[in-house]
Length: 100
Image (cartoon, rainbow, N blue to C red):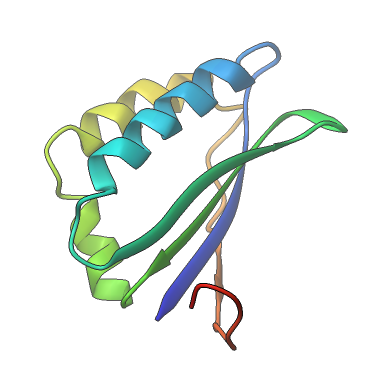
């Protein structure tokens, strides 16, 4: 399996709008082959940060999710809300756990 964990920093006051776009993206990819988890979170101590955690059957399934209709449009919509270019997410090896 493939686990990707990332943190996006929104411009001041834009974190909710960014999270809303990502939640919309989660609906689009939820039915994509290989999607096991796509979760959006926030940190009460860092009000501009929005976190994304994804689990896929493999990296190829993740990469294919970027081709789903509407996903690229949401990426374009989210980019102006970011405080700088997004950093590459952490690719983590899954060792196991509940639900895996």
